[in-house]
Amino acid sequence: MAKKKTAFVCTECGADFPKWQGQCPACGAWNTLQEFVVDPATPKSRGAERTGYSGELTEVRNLNEIVLEETPRIGTGMGELDRVLGGGLVPGSAILIGGHPGAGKSTLLLQVMCRLADTESCLYVTGEESLSQVAMRADRLKLPKEKLRLAAETDVEQILDLARKERPRLLVVDSIQVMYLAGLQSAPGSVAQVRECAAALTRFAKQTGTVLLLVGHVTKDGTLAGPKVLEHMIDCSLMLEGSTDSRFRTLRGLKNRFGAVNELGVFAMTGEGLKEVKNPSAIFLNRAEEIAAGSLVTVVWEGTRPLLVELQALVDASHFGNPRRVCVGLEANRLAMLLAVLHRHGGIQVGDQDVFANVVGGVKVAETAADLALVLSIVSSFRDRPLGRDLVVFGEIGLSGEIRPVPQGQERLYEAVKHGFKRAIIPKANRPRQLPEGVEVVAVATLAEALEQL
Image (cartoon, rainbow, N blue to C red; front, side, top):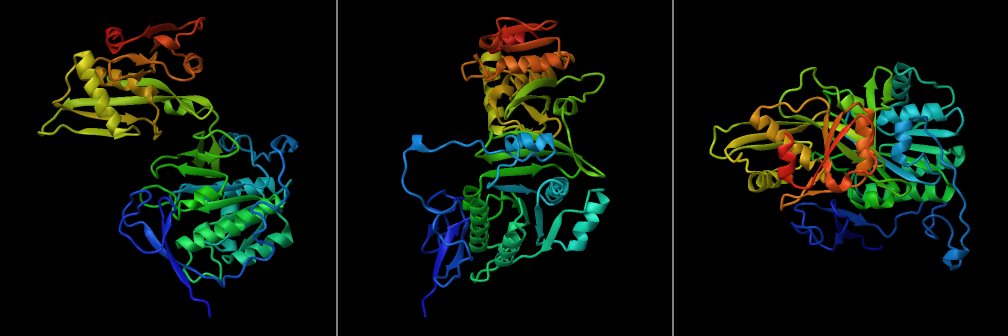
């Protein structure tokens, strides 16, 4: 009898080691190594012999000899979802959709599958709900139920047999954490099961040209559960985010082999499911009639389009020895650096003040184009001077106090003008040759010049 081998896989980076260690030598994470059994007698899935991950092996050819054929994408019927996917579903692709419980992952996929079932063959496999529960949700959402094929199964071998019999164009597996292969000794949801189940399903999708949609759970820190190699196997990784106290959901592309990364789609959760929001800037700019001090609008670039968001800052006297620096939707280290630049090159000292910064609407701003708007909103709150409703600001601030240009500056400016803004403070290098009509553009080169405009 062959002896079983054990390995320890890091859930953060996917590296494997022969013995357990407290810290992963590859990525430095602590307590992330999990044991799984490597069984040499594990049965292979029928029709999934390892002759090639995406098909049969062929002869070696030159790159210029390969004929490029335009693969038609499958539209989902939702413009925001198609935008994040890069234009639609690509046949033979594996897509992973993650999110917190209650974010709307199953609801979104059920809506898409019910609509596409009229024109495409679709198979929805649920492992966490019964068929009656899925039917109840579809009835509540008032979705067409005549042509969608359903199955409740957690055994990957059985799912592959069903898929070979039904031959669907689209296959949904909800969720990958509850699926298992009988040949593995570990429990469903473990590192070995998640990795091998995803590999078997992805191999089937590549060889048959089926669109595979996997639902993934997230951990406490908001990352996708399971080994990191799960994200390397699939072609597209999407994250559906949204707080329970807000009816809006954001779908962000974390990885996409067929489109832009960091593309953002906005949906509204209603009684009839998720509805796409075609003009997200109008939602995030739902401001009060009288603008208070510390409120300012900036333009961030999400994927392939500009998005207007409102930044709010509150500066208050600190009652403790160590003033607080709190950020919601922004990077805390970036805020500390900008406060130091404001003191050194702007002559404004807020070292004894509590500084709170927030992005309205739950959007997370990671790019540096919001630096200038954040600093000016802090100054506005510190001096208790509102900046007006018609002002938009964007620009990156360097450590020497210079205002650096940002990518797609002209597109950002035109997006602000389209929403009715009359004044704009932008980097000098981003000033367009031909200014749009009805807007006053102030181009600044240093932080001191920007402060003078207030």
